[in-house]
Structures are given as C-alpha cells and as structure tokens.
Length: 285
Image (cartoon, rainbow, N blue to C red; front, side, top):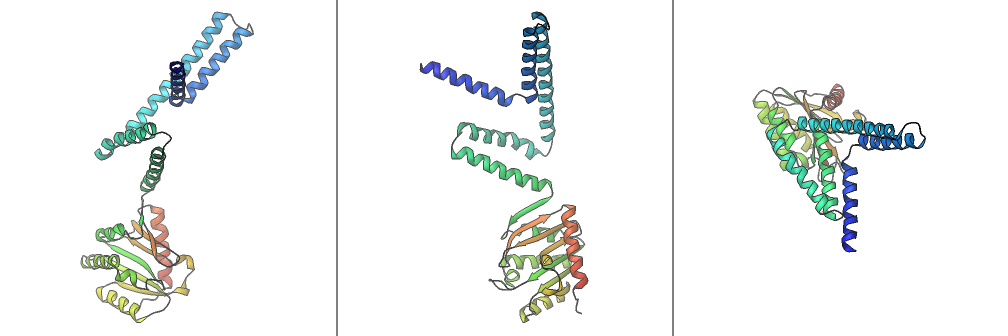
C-alpha cells in the first residue's frame, strides 16, 4: 500500500512539474486537438482514421510551437547573459542557489525568505536599470563620491531647519565634514559651486557657516523659508547637469534616505527646483 501511495504521489508530482514547465500554448493546443479528434469521431463528421490524423496534426503543430517558444526563451536568456563577466559567472550560481532553497526547503521559512530576498533584489535591480541608487540616511557614499568625480559645476540646495539634533548637526557630523572636504577639493580643481541655503532663522552659527563657504569660493544664496512653496523645501545636489542627489527627510528634518540618480527625468526635475529657488534667492556680496 505504501509503495502504491508513493507511486501515486510521485506520478502526481511529475504531472505538476510537467504542467508547470510546459508552455501554455502547447497545453491548450494539445487539449483542443484531442477534443477535435474526439468530436469528429463521435459526430461521424470524419472517419476514425481521419479523426486520429486531425488530432495528431493538431498535437504536432502545438509541439512545434512549444519548441519554438522554448528556443526563443533560451535565446533571450543567452542574450541577457551576454554581458559583464561578473554577471555571466554569477547568474547561474544565483539562480541555482535560489531554486535549491525553494525546492529543498519547500514549505519552510527558508523558502519564504528566499522568495522575499529575491523580490527585494529584483526591485533594487529595476531601480539600478533606471539609473537610480537608494541608500539609508547614514550612507552618503554617492553624495561624496559624485562630488569627487565632478568636473565642471555643482549646484545644491540645503535646508537648514530647526531639528532635534540641531540646525547644523549634519554639517558638523562626519558625513557633513567629509562632504565639505570633497567640496574644497572640487573648488581646488576649478569646479564652480553654487549653494542656496533655505533657512528659518539666520543664526550666528549659520552666518558663520555661510561665510566660511563664501571665503572658500562657493557662490552662496540665501532663501527664507517662506520664499517658496513647502514642496520645494528639499535637499538636493546636481553635478555637471548629468547626475543628482536628493535627501529624503523625516518629519523631524533628518535625512532618512539618500537617492542618487542619473535618470534624465530626475536630473531635470531637481535642476528645475534649484533654478526656481535661485530666481528668488539673494546672493550677498
């Protein structure tokens, strides 16, 4: 009895796998061909031999279409893998590991986690394909790296608002200091830097920061908080008109995410925001 049960279970699993891997076109075509053959035979619209030949012809056409569809998919996969060596070498291993996790540990938390991580990886890959990188608020690798790579012009909009950690806490922190060092290096190699400070109150500390940047060679603009619409209260940088960064803010005014992009629509949008603010800002001195 156990052997029979196992045999039936194995047959059922094989059938499920066959259906899962078969092309829908083939399944539909074979089903319709069998129905056509049976219908012709039962209605006496054709002889038994003719009914059989019609069914076999339909099944043959379906299998040919299935073969063409499979060949097209294989060709598409080979085209996708015709890329950088690190992608060609790692993709089969990645796919194999995920498949093994899903099949060997089916029904467990491991399989569910494998699917979750794959979906997360897929979303991130789609962002990269669109030319966007998203990092946590404490990871400013792209902000600093793009400033080091800048060759002609850097424009930025900085919001200095009352926040829990202090108005100038970002500039005084490790990320702010490293970013300013990258600004100084850019100025030294001839990069033009224009930065607009949107502020609520022009405090002595803010005035000192502004003066420090002006003495270093930054063209500084001042924009009171009420000068523009609230949706323009953003932190942004645009490098050489080809890449950009936007700091996503929390309700407390802290940067929660760093969004870097080379997508033309993103660069155009942030450039437009900067120019609008520049038209209203004042540039002392």
